[in-house]
Length: 217
Image (tube, rainbow, N blue to C red; front, side):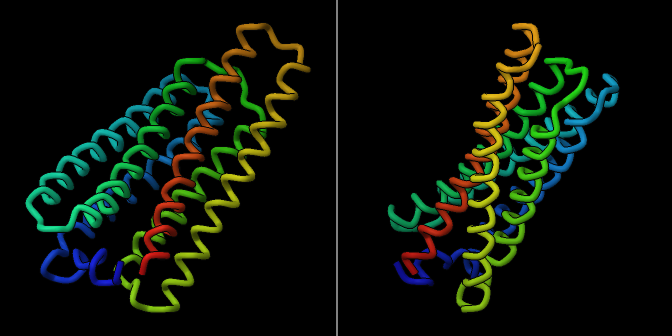
């Protein structure tokens, strides 16, 4: 697939898709930062405020996805191009959904304290969201070799963060059953580490998709 075939929507004729990707990335980055605040927050009222803000990001993201499909269905693209275009938007929406899922677990499980490993995992999710925002900002300049290399570097960075969270997930599960926690507390913490792992996987899938697109250029 040529550069023009996939990224034709970035030129003035079909530029309408690019701002939608940018909006998705902005909501993702904002929600990831709010999630990072939630992980160490103990005040219930503040937790509820942060969760509502994340839910607002998720709702706005859903609205962007609906706008995206309205524009996509009104645009003439080949079936192959359409698949890549819509999958990227869907994957970004899923990442935002997973951040909201993580926030819901933090709010509803009522943790007295959170282990450092879990805080690091939310840090990594936030860093991955920031890298994704930088990737989306650079998509417009895919015909620039330096930008192309930077996108690949950022995709690798996301993969590294996902790998780090994989390692944290495995070690945390192992340590969890060695602690003097009640069964209820074990289940609560397992729920959280699992949803954080799923959230990190979802952003890694986005970077894989972008790399796949780049490989076709």
